[in-house]
Amino acid sequence: MGSKKHIVLVGPMGTGKSTIGRHLAQHLQYPFFDSDHEIERRCGASIAWIFDVEGERGFREREQSMISELLTSSEAGLVLATGGGAILSEHNRACIREHGCVIYLHTSVDEQLARTSKDKNRPLLQTENPREVLERFMIIRDPLYRKTAHHLVSTENTSLKQVVSEIADFAALS
Ligand code: S3P
Image (cartoon, rainbow, N blue to C red; front, side):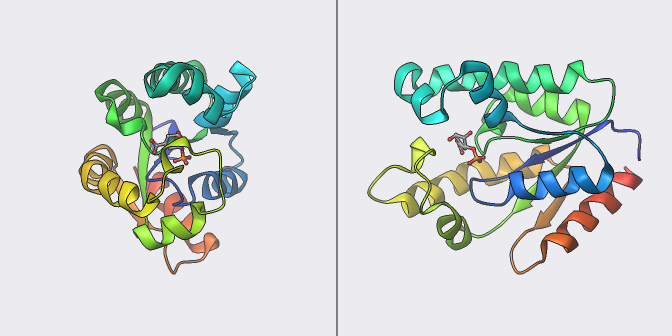
């Protein structure tokens, strides 16, 4: 591995961060963490419930401390999948870049929509027009993903195996 200890995956909802992260971790024999799952585990409540009770603001505070804790408390390298909005915080962007080799998993809004359409645990998409939300998010967030990441990998029309080996190869050199 290169000098960066951890590998951090950023990108929009439905780009495959959790699935790719799990397989990448297995490939590298690293532990895998998903910040949303860790928040749910810590709170004993779903993301949807946290948004309901504490609002997006409460969720973002939990997200910030979880990401910082995960990236700073492990001596050994890990793979971390972050939530799609994690990069909105300047603190998160700096922390992620400082502690990890950051990969932007990119995919089209069509693909994001297809992969998230049946999921009820993404509160920001529980609206009449999730496409509009995903398009709006992409305009705001794409520059932030690009600015935070060291490398961009497209997850569209690419096999899981290919994506995993592209990330592993990049991380080994960085
Ligand atoms: C969010 C993405 C979700 C989750 C929360 C908010 C976002 O994570 O953190 O619902 O703002 O894009 P995934 O990207 O893993 O779906």
